[in-house]
Image (cartoon, rainbow, N blue to C red; front, side, top):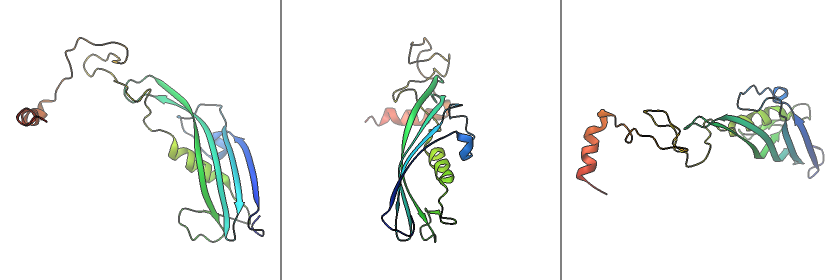
Amino acid sequence: MLRRPGTAKDVEIFVLPDVVDIDDPRLVPGTEIAVVLNCESLSDGIVVNGHIGVVFQGECRRCLTPVGASMDIAVHELYQLVLTDPDAFEITNDQINLAPMVRETVLLELPDAPLCQSDCLGLCPTCGIDLNHRKCACGGEATDPRWAALDGLRDQFPE
């Protein structure tokens, strides 16, 4: 491909996370990572465009209910023989290694603290009830006494 700029090749592969050195508990065990790419040759490298599909799991950061979804991650990467772009991947022996790019892309896009829904109310800090399903009888949020002086300012200067 490198000797003929403008040449394109479609690539579609399905790999297990350990093949691309991903050992992350957020990925659903046993599910494959779908990699669908179009590789186009340039005069000094190869442009890779496409999508990576992955299924993740975790806990909602507010209410701790199980969360999971499939993600479709857009990919736009550059491979170069001589690295002039600091974000480019290197072409070695006229071949591109997709594994580092797939690993980096997936790990950067996986949510660190997913939410079950964008307006999740979370757990009551006093009694622990999931506020998405029931109201508690705790009487509202407990205020940290260290913020009392600032609460007094809020009362003096209403919005």
